[in-house]
Length: 68
Image (cartoon, rainbow, N blue to C red; front, side):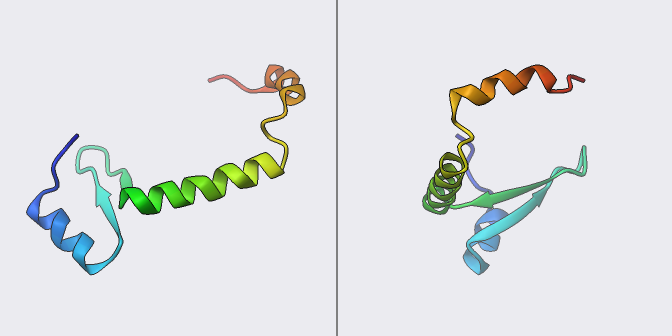
């Protein structure tokens, strides 16, 4: 686990979500509290199950997935 820097701590005090940019790649990451992440994950997991995405019958469609 990585400890937050003082700057990151200050950003998280302002809002529950902080955006971080990797200066090497310019990619942006979102930092959220673990409890918020777990709630979002539960919502998404529930939505995908209701949509039937975990149905083993759909595994047959994996053959059509493009590989890079």
